[in-house]
Length: 475
Image (cartoon, rainbow, N blue to C red):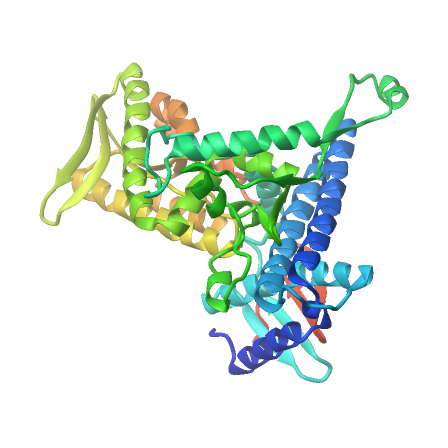
Protein backbone atom coordinates (compact mmCIF):
# COMPACT_ATOMS: atom_id res chain seq x y z
CA UNK A 1 0.00 0.00 0.00
CA UNK A 2 1.66 3.28 -1.08
CA UNK A 3 1.92 6.35 1.16
CA UNK A 4 -1.40 8.24 0.76
CA UNK A 5 -1.33 11.64 -0.94
CA UNK A 6 -2.92 13.12 2.17
CA UNK A 7 0.01 11.80 4.21
CA UNK A 8 2.45 13.62 1.95
CA UNK A 9 0.44 16.82 2.43
CA UNK A 10 0.60 16.37 6.20
CA UNK A 11 4.33 15.67 5.98
CA UNK A 12 4.84 18.99 4.18
CA UNK A 13 2.69 20.78 6.76
CA UNK A 14 4.73 19.28 9.61
CA UNK A 15 8.04 20.23 7.97
CA UNK A 16 6.80 23.81 7.43
CA UNK A 17 5.65 24.06 11.06
CA UNK A 18 9.05 22.87 12.30
CA UNK A 19 10.82 25.34 10.02
CA UNK A 20 8.70 28.19 11.47
CA UNK A 21 9.50 27.49 15.13
CA UNK A 22 10.80 30.61 16.92
CA UNK A 23 13.83 28.72 18.25
CA UNK A 24 15.51 28.86 14.83
CA UNK A 25 15.72 32.66 15.15
CA UNK A 26 18.43 32.10 17.76
CA UNK A 27 22.13 32.47 17.03
CA UNK A 28 23.35 29.24 15.45
CA UNK A 29 26.54 28.97 17.58
CA UNK A 30 24.71 29.70 20.83
CA UNK A 31 21.88 27.33 20.04
CA UNK A 32 24.16 24.47 19.05
CA UNK A 33 26.22 24.94 22.22
CA UNK A 34 23.04 24.79 24.31
CA UNK A 35 21.83 21.70 22.44
CA UNK A 36 25.19 19.95 22.88
CA UNK A 37 24.94 20.50 26.63
CA UNK A 38 21.41 19.11 26.63
CA UNK A 39 22.58 16.09 24.61
CA UNK A 40 25.38 15.49 27.12
CA UNK A 41 22.79 15.55 29.91
CA UNK A 42 20.75 12.95 28.02
CA UNK A 43 23.80 10.71 27.59
CA UNK A 44 24.50 10.96 31.32
CA UNK A 45 20.96 9.69 31.95
CA UNK A 46 21.65 6.79 29.55
CA UNK A 47 24.88 5.97 31.37
CA UNK A 48 23.06 6.09 34.71
CA UNK A 49 20.65 3.47 33.34
CA UNK A 50 23.61 1.33 32.26
CA UNK A 51 25.14 1.72 35.71
CA UNK A 52 21.89 0.65 37.40
CA UNK A 53 21.62 -2.39 35.13
CA UNK A 54 25.26 -3.29 35.78
CA UNK A 55 24.86 -2.94 39.55
CA UNK A 56 21.80 -5.15 39.81
CA UNK A 57 22.47 -7.46 36.79
CA UNK A 58 19.28 -6.39 35.01
CA UNK A 59 19.15 -7.50 31.37
CA UNK A 60 16.02 -5.41 30.78
CA UNK A 61 17.90 -2.40 32.13
CA UNK A 62 20.47 -2.69 29.36
CA UNK A 63 17.67 -2.91 26.81
CA UNK A 64 16.07 0.25 28.20
CA UNK A 65 19.39 2.08 28.16
CA UNK A 66 20.15 1.07 24.57
CA UNK A 67 16.69 2.20 23.51
CA UNK A 68 17.15 5.57 25.21
CA UNK A 69 20.59 6.00 23.68
CA UNK A 70 19.24 5.40 20.18
CA UNK A 71 16.33 7.82 20.63
CA UNK A 72 18.41 10.56 22.23
CA UNK A 73 21.08 10.40 19.54
CA UNK A 74 18.47 10.50 16.79
CA UNK A 75 16.74 13.46 18.41
CA UNK A 76 20.00 15.32 18.94
CA UNK A 77 21.05 14.83 15.32
CA UNK A 78 17.82 16.31 13.99
CA UNK A 79 18.10 19.35 16.25
CA UNK A 80 21.68 19.92 15.10
CA UNK A 81 20.69 19.55 11.44
CA UNK A 82 17.74 21.89 11.81
CA UNK A 83 19.89 24.49 13.58
CA UNK A 84 22.51 24.24 10.81
CA UNK A 85 19.85 24.61 8.12
CA UNK A 86 17.51 27.22 9.61
CA UNK A 87 19.57 29.39 11.98
CA UNK A 88 21.74 32.35 11.11
CA UNK A 89 24.98 33.17 12.86
CA UNK A 90 23.68 36.47 14.24
CA UNK A 91 20.20 35.50 15.48
CA UNK A 92 18.99 37.32 18.59
CA UNK A 93 16.28 34.99 19.92
CA UNK A 94 16.95 33.54 23.39
CA UNK A 95 15.21 30.17 23.76
CA UNK A 96 14.05 28.97 27.15
CA UNK A 97 15.16 25.70 28.70
CA UNK A 98 11.67 24.34 28.02
CA UNK A 99 12.01 25.19 24.32
CA UNK A 100 15.37 23.42 24.14
CA UNK A 101 13.95 20.29 25.76
CA UNK A 102 10.87 20.41 23.53
CA UNK A 103 12.87 20.63 20.29
CA UNK A 104 15.16 17.83 21.47
CA UNK A 105 12.13 15.60 22.03
CA UNK A 106 10.69 16.79 18.73
CA UNK A 107 13.77 15.52 16.91
CA UNK A 108 13.36 12.06 18.44
CA UNK A 109 9.67 11.89 17.45
CA UNK A 110 10.41 13.20 13.98
CA UNK A 111 13.00 10.44 13.43
CA UNK A 112 10.36 7.83 14.30
CA UNK A 113 7.91 9.55 11.92
CA UNK A 114 10.46 9.55 9.07
CA UNK A 115 11.28 5.87 9.64
CA UNK A 116 7.58 5.00 9.55
CA UNK A 117 7.06 6.83 6.26
CA UNK A 118 10.04 5.05 4.69
CA UNK A 119 8.66 1.71 5.84
CA UNK A 120 5.24 2.63 4.48
CA UNK A 121 6.83 3.49 1.13
CA UNK A 122 8.13 -0.08 0.96
CA UNK A 123 4.75 -1.52 1.86
CA UNK A 124 5.84 -2.67 5.32
CA UNK A 125 3.47 -0.32 7.17
CA UNK A 126 -0.09 0.84 6.40
CA UNK A 127 -1.26 4.34 7.30
CA UNK A 128 -4.71 5.46 8.45
CA UNK A 129 -5.44 9.19 8.78
CA UNK A 130 -8.25 10.85 10.71
CA UNK A 131 -8.35 14.60 10.18
CA UNK A 132 -10.72 15.29 13.08
CA UNK A 133 -9.29 14.63 15.59
CA UNK A 134 -5.83 14.87 14.00
CA UNK A 135 -4.61 11.28 14.34
CA UNK A 136 -2.24 9.20 12.18
CA UNK A 137 -2.14 5.46 12.80
CA UNK A 138 0.73 3.29 11.56
CA UNK A 139 -0.13 -0.42 11.38
CA UNK A 140 3.10 -2.40 11.59
CA UNK A 141 1.68 -5.86 10.92
CA UNK A 142 0.68 -8.93 12.89
CA UNK A 143 2.73 -11.65 14.55
CA UNK A 144 5.97 -13.05 13.13
CA UNK A 145 7.21 -9.73 11.82
CA UNK A 146 10.36 -7.81 12.56
CA UNK A 147 8.36 -5.82 15.11
CA UNK A 148 7.60 -8.70 17.46
CA UNK A 149 8.73 -7.91 20.98
CA UNK A 150 10.91 -10.99 21.50
CA UNK A 151 12.96 -10.20 18.38
CA UNK A 152 13.22 -6.47 18.99
CA UNK A 153 14.26 -7.10 22.59
CA UNK A 154 17.02 -9.48 21.48
CA UNK A 155 18.36 -7.03 18.91
CA UNK A 156 18.38 -4.17 21.40
CA UNK A 157 20.53 -6.29 23.69
CA UNK A 158 22.95 -7.57 21.05
CA UNK A 159 23.27 -5.14 18.13
CA UNK A 160 24.65 -2.10 20.02
CA UNK A 161 27.34 -4.22 21.70
CA UNK A 162 28.61 -5.98 18.60
CA UNK A 163 30.45 -4.69 15.59
CA UNK A 164 32.22 -6.01 12.56
CA UNK A 165 35.43 -7.99 12.44
CA UNK A 166 38.30 -5.56 11.68
CA UNK A 167 39.26 -6.23 8.07
CA UNK A 168 40.82 -2.89 7.15
CA UNK A 169 44.57 -2.37 7.44
CA UNK A 170 46.05 0.97 8.47
CA UNK A 171 47.52 1.43 5.00
CA UNK A 172 44.20 0.96 3.18
CA UNK A 173 42.99 4.11 1.41
CA UNK A 174 39.34 4.17 2.39
CA UNK A 175 38.95 7.67 0.92
CA UNK A 176 41.09 9.61 -1.52
CA UNK A 177 42.22 11.95 1.28
CA UNK A 178 42.97 9.63 4.19
CA UNK A 179 43.79 6.05 5.09
CA UNK A 180 42.32 3.83 7.77
CA UNK A 181 45.45 4.47 9.82
CA UNK A 182 44.96 8.23 9.57
CA UNK A 183 41.39 7.91 10.84
CA UNK A 184 42.42 5.64 13.71
CA UNK A 185 45.24 7.93 14.77
CA UNK A 186 43.04 11.04 14.81
CA UNK A 187 40.13 9.38 16.61
CA UNK A 188 42.42 7.70 19.16
CA UNK A 189 43.91 11.10 20.00
CA UNK A 190 40.45 12.61 20.36
CA UNK A 191 39.29 9.71 22.53
CA UNK A 192 42.36 10.02 24.76
CA UNK A 193 41.67 13.73 25.22
CA UNK A 194 38.02 12.99 25.99
CA UNK A 195 38.79 10.24 28.51
CA UNK A 196 41.18 12.54 30.37
CA UNK A 197 38.42 15.10 30.89
CA UNK A 198 35.74 12.70 32.13
CA UNK A 199 34.78 12.14 35.73
CA UNK A 200 33.73 8.71 37.00
CA UNK A 201 30.33 7.83 38.42
CA UNK A 202 30.87 5.33 41.25
CA UNK A 203 28.16 3.29 42.96
CA UNK A 204 28.00 3.66 46.72
CA UNK A 205 30.47 1.23 48.31
CA UNK A 206 28.07 0.33 51.16
CA UNK A 207 25.40 -0.75 48.70
CA UNK A 208 27.91 -2.79 46.71
CA UNK A 209 29.17 -4.49 49.86
CA UNK A 210 25.60 -5.44 50.77
CA UNK A 211 25.17 -6.91 47.29
CA UNK A 212 28.49 -8.74 47.52
CA UNK A 213 29.83 -6.95 44.44
CA UNK A 214 33.18 -5.25 43.74
CA UNK A 215 33.43 -1.59 42.73
CA UNK A 216 31.05 -0.63 39.93
CA UNK A 217 31.64 2.57 38.01
CA UNK A 218 31.07 4.18 34.65
CA UNK A 219 32.56 7.24 32.91
CA UNK A 220 30.51 10.42 33.03
CA UNK A 221 29.99 11.94 29.55
CA UNK A 222 31.24 15.50 29.20
CA UNK A 223 31.39 18.16 26.50
CA UNK A 224 34.93 18.27 25.10
CA UNK A 225 36.27 21.33 23.30
CA UNK A 226 38.84 20.41 20.67
CA UNK A 227 41.15 22.07 18.17
CA UNK A 228 41.08 21.30 14.47
CA UNK A 229 44.40 19.67 13.48
CA UNK A 230 46.63 21.86 11.38
CA UNK A 231 48.41 19.12 9.44
CA UNK A 232 47.35 17.03 6.47
CA UNK A 233 45.72 14.47 6.44
CA UNK A 234 44.59 14.80 10.08
CA UNK A 235 42.61 17.93 9.26
CA UNK A 236 40.79 16.08 6.48
CA UNK A 237 39.72 13.32 8.87
CA UNK A 238 38.60 15.95 11.37
CA UNK A 239 36.58 17.81 8.73
CA UNK A 240 34.84 14.63 7.59
CA UNK A 241 33.87 13.90 11.22
CA UNK A 242 32.37 17.38 11.64
CA UNK A 243 28.71 18.17 11.01
CA UNK A 244 28.63 20.96 8.40
CA UNK A 245 28.17 24.39 10.00
CA UNK A 246 25.52 25.17 7.41
CA UNK A 247 23.52 22.47 5.70
CA UNK A 248 20.98 22.34 2.89
CA UNK A 249 17.82 20.28 2.65
CA UNK A 250 19.41 17.74 0.30
CA UNK A 251 22.51 17.12 2.40
CA UNK A 252 20.67 16.66 5.69
CA UNK A 253 19.01 13.46 4.46
CA UNK A 254 22.41 11.86 3.86
CA UNK A 255 23.38 12.30 7.51
CA UNK A 256 21.50 9.65 9.47
CA UNK A 257 23.75 8.84 12.44
CA UNK A 258 25.23 11.31 14.89
CA UNK A 259 28.29 9.06 15.32
CA UNK A 260 29.11 9.58 11.63
CA UNK A 261 29.68 13.29 12.40
CA UNK A 262 30.12 13.56 16.19
CA UNK A 263 32.06 16.85 16.07
CA UNK A 264 30.04 20.10 16.03
CA UNK A 265 31.21 23.55 15.02
CA UNK A 266 30.26 26.34 17.39
CA UNK A 267 31.35 29.57 15.77
CA UNK A 268 35.12 29.22 15.41
CA UNK A 269 35.34 26.41 17.97
CA UNK A 270 34.63 22.69 17.85
CA UNK A 271 33.18 20.34 20.43
CA UNK A 272 31.81 16.82 20.91
CA UNK A 273 30.46 14.64 23.69
CA UNK A 274 33.24 12.49 25.16
CA UNK A 275 31.37 9.18 24.92
CA UNK A 276 30.81 9.72 21.19
CA UNK A 277 34.49 10.36 20.53
CA UNK A 278 35.39 7.18 22.41
CA UNK A 279 32.80 5.16 20.48
CA UNK A 280 34.06 6.14 17.02
CA UNK A 281 37.65 5.44 18.05
CA UNK A 282 37.02 1.80 18.93
CA UNK A 283 34.41 0.74 16.36
CA UNK A 284 35.74 0.58 12.79
CA UNK A 285 32.22 0.58 11.41
CA UNK A 286 31.93 4.34 11.82
CA UNK A 287 35.13 4.92 9.85
CA UNK A 288 33.74 2.81 7.03
CA UNK A 289 30.35 4.54 7.16
CA UNK A 290 32.03 7.93 6.78
CA UNK A 291 34.17 6.66 3.90
CA UNK A 292 31.18 5.14 2.08
CA UNK A 293 29.27 8.43 2.36
CA UNK A 294 31.96 10.88 1.28
CA UNK A 295 33.94 8.78 -1.24
CA UNK A 296 31.95 5.71 -2.36
CA UNK A 297 34.33 4.81 -5.21
CA UNK A 298 37.44 4.57 -3.02
CA UNK A 299 35.43 2.84 -0.31
CA UNK A 300 34.27 0.21 -2.83
CA UNK A 301 37.91 -0.65 -3.58
CA UNK A 302 38.59 -1.04 0.14
CA UNK A 303 35.47 -3.21 0.50
CA UNK A 304 36.85 -5.59 -2.15
CA UNK A 305 40.00 -5.99 -0.04
CA UNK A 306 37.85 -6.74 3.00
CA UNK A 307 36.06 -9.57 1.22
CA UNK A 308 39.40 -11.04 0.11
CA UNK A 309 40.55 -10.95 3.73
CA UNK A 310 37.36 -12.73 4.78
CA UNK A 311 38.47 -15.62 2.56
CA UNK A 312 41.89 -15.71 4.22
CA UNK A 313 40.18 -15.97 7.61
CA UNK A 314 37.77 -18.71 6.55
CA UNK A 315 40.16 -20.90 4.57
CA UNK A 316 42.45 -22.17 7.38
CA UNK A 317 39.49 -22.86 9.67
CA UNK A 318 37.77 -24.93 6.98
CA UNK A 319 40.98 -26.79 6.15
CA UNK A 320 41.60 -27.53 9.82
CA UNK A 321 38.23 -29.30 9.86
CA UNK A 322 39.13 -31.41 6.83
CA UNK A 323 37.60 -29.39 4.00
CA UNK A 324 39.29 -28.96 0.63
CA UNK A 325 38.83 -25.30 -0.27
CA UNK A 326 38.58 -23.46 -3.60
CA UNK A 327 37.93 -19.74 -3.80
CA UNK A 328 36.41 -17.42 -6.42
CA UNK A 329 34.99 -20.37 -8.36
CA UNK A 330 33.33 -19.34 -11.63
CA UNK A 331 30.41 -21.35 -13.02
CA UNK A 332 29.34 -20.77 -16.62
CA UNK A 333 26.07 -20.67 -18.54
CA UNK A 334 24.93 -18.53 -16.83
CA UNK A 335 28.02 -17.09 -15.23
CA UNK A 336 27.93 -17.12 -11.43
CA UNK A 337 30.74 -16.91 -8.91
CA UNK A 338 31.03 -18.73 -5.60
CA UNK A 339 33.35 -17.04 -3.12
CA UNK A 340 34.24 -20.32 -1.39
CA UNK A 341 33.51 -23.91 -2.44
CA UNK A 342 34.60 -26.47 0.17
CA UNK A 343 34.36 -30.23 -0.23
CA UNK A 344 34.72 -33.08 2.23
CA UNK A 345 33.90 -36.55 0.92
CA UNK A 346 30.44 -36.36 -0.63
CA UNK A 347 29.64 -33.01 1.02
CA UNK A 348 29.92 -29.67 -0.78
CA UNK A 349 29.75 -26.42 1.17
CA UNK A 350 29.26 -23.05 -0.57
CA UNK A 351 29.95 -19.79 1.27
CA UNK A 352 28.90 -16.44 -0.19
CA UNK A 353 30.72 -13.56 1.52
CA UNK A 354 29.20 -10.16 2.22
CA UNK A 355 31.13 -7.17 3.50
CA UNK A 356 28.48 -4.95 5.07
CA UNK A 357 28.23 -1.69 6.95
CA UNK A 358 26.70 -1.43 10.41
CA UNK A 359 23.05 -0.32 9.94
CA UNK A 360 22.04 2.62 12.12
CA UNK A 361 18.47 3.24 10.91
CA UNK A 362 15.52 1.07 9.79
CA UNK A 363 16.14 2.21 6.20
CA UNK A 364 19.74 0.99 6.41
CA UNK A 365 18.54 -2.30 7.89
CA UNK A 366 16.27 -2.65 4.86
CA UNK A 367 19.20 -2.00 2.48
CA UNK A 368 21.49 -4.46 4.28
CA UNK A 369 18.72 -7.05 4.20
CA UNK A 370 18.38 -6.58 0.45
CA UNK A 371 22.04 -7.48 0.11
CA UNK A 372 21.63 -10.52 2.34
CA UNK A 373 18.56 -11.73 0.48
CA UNK A 374 20.44 -11.33 -2.79
CA UNK A 375 23.26 -13.44 -1.37
CA UNK A 376 20.80 -16.07 -0.16
CA UNK A 377 19.17 -16.39 -3.58
CA UNK A 378 22.58 -16.44 -5.29
CA UNK A 379 23.77 -19.25 -3.01
CA UNK A 380 20.54 -21.20 -3.43
CA UNK A 381 20.92 -21.04 -7.22
CA UNK A 382 24.51 -22.30 -6.98
CA UNK A 383 23.50 -25.20 -4.75
CA UNK A 384 20.67 -26.17 -7.10
CA UNK A 385 22.89 -26.26 -10.18
CA UNK A 386 25.89 -27.97 -8.54
CA UNK A 387 24.09 -30.46 -6.30
CA UNK A 388 25.83 -28.79 -3.39
CA UNK A 389 24.90 -30.02 0.06
CA UNK A 390 24.91 -26.87 2.18
CA UNK A 391 25.26 -23.12 1.74
CA UNK A 392 25.70 -20.10 3.98
CA UNK A 393 25.83 -16.34 3.52
CA UNK A 394 28.75 -15.13 5.63
CA UNK A 395 29.13 -11.48 6.68
CA UNK A 396 31.76 -9.57 8.61
CA UNK A 397 29.32 -8.70 11.39
CA UNK A 398 25.69 -8.09 10.46
CA UNK A 399 23.44 -11.07 11.14
CA UNK A 400 20.27 -9.71 9.54
CA UNK A 401 16.87 -9.27 11.15
CA UNK A 402 13.74 -11.39 11.12
CA UNK A 403 12.73 -10.34 7.61
CA UNK A 404 15.97 -11.50 6.01
CA UNK A 405 15.88 -14.63 8.16
CA UNK A 406 12.40 -15.44 6.87
CA UNK A 407 14.03 -15.86 3.45
CA UNK A 408 17.03 -17.66 4.95
CA UNK A 409 14.77 -20.22 6.60
CA UNK A 410 12.63 -20.70 3.52
CA UNK A 411 15.67 -21.18 1.24
CA UNK A 412 17.68 -23.14 3.83
CA UNK A 413 20.63 -20.75 3.52
CA UNK A 414 21.54 -19.51 7.03
CA UNK A 415 23.18 -16.14 7.68
CA UNK A 416 26.46 -16.44 9.56
CA UNK A 417 29.28 -14.09 10.49
CA UNK A 418 33.03 -14.57 10.66
CA UNK A 419 32.57 -15.26 14.38
CA UNK A 420 30.50 -18.31 13.36
CA UNK A 421 33.01 -19.85 10.95
CA UNK A 422 34.12 -22.41 13.57
CA UNK A 423 30.65 -23.92 13.97
CA UNK A 424 29.96 -23.74 10.23
CA UNK A 425 33.22 -25.58 9.52
CA UNK A 426 32.92 -28.17 12.27
CA UNK A 427 29.29 -29.20 11.77
CA UNK A 428 27.40 -27.22 9.10
CA UNK A 429 24.45 -29.61 9.21
CA UNK A 430 23.52 -28.51 12.74
CA UNK A 431 24.69 -24.90 12.42
CA UNK A 432 21.25 -23.66 11.31
CA UNK A 433 19.56 -23.86 14.71
CA UNK A 434 22.56 -22.39 16.51
CA UNK A 435 22.72 -19.46 14.09
CA UNK A 436 18.99 -18.91 14.55
CA UNK A 437 19.52 -18.81 18.30
CA UNK A 438 22.33 -16.31 17.98
CA UNK A 439 20.11 -13.95 16.00
CA UNK A 440 17.22 -14.34 18.44
CA UNK A 441 14.90 -16.61 16.45
CA UNK A 442 13.90 -19.80 18.31
CA UNK A 443 13.65 -23.16 16.58
CA UNK A 444 10.00 -23.32 17.48
CA UNK A 445 8.48 -19.83 17.57
CA UNK A 446 5.50 -19.53 19.86
CA UNK A 447 2.15 -19.50 18.08
CA UNK A 448 1.50 -15.89 19.02
CA UNK A 449 4.69 -13.92 19.72
CA UNK A 450 4.33 -11.06 22.13
CA UNK A 451 3.45 -7.82 20.38
CA UNK A 452 5.09 -4.52 21.14
CA UNK A 453 2.72 -2.31 23.18
CA UNK A 454 1.04 0.51 21.30
CA UNK A 455 3.21 3.63 21.22
CA UNK A 456 1.94 7.19 20.88
CA UNK A 457 3.57 10.56 20.36
CA UNK A 458 2.61 14.11 19.41
CA UNK A 459 4.14 15.80 16.38
CA UNK A 460 3.24 19.39 15.49
CA UNK A 461 -0.46 19.05 16.33
CA UNK A 462 -0.85 15.45 15.15
CA UNK A 463 -1.23 12.41 17.36
CA UNK A 464 0.90 9.52 16.07
CA UNK A 465 -0.05 5.97 16.98
CA UNK A 466 2.22 3.00 16.20
CA UNK A 467 0.30 -0.26 16.36
CA UNK A 468 1.85 -3.73 16.14
CA UNK A 469 -1.22 -5.37 14.65
CA UNK A 470 -2.63 -6.39 11.26
CA UNK A 471 -3.98 -3.78 8.88
CA UNK A 472 -7.76 -3.28 9.25
CA UNK A 473 -9.71 -4.59 6.29
CA UNK A 474 -11.24 -1.14 5.79
CA UNK A 475 -7.88 0.29 4.73
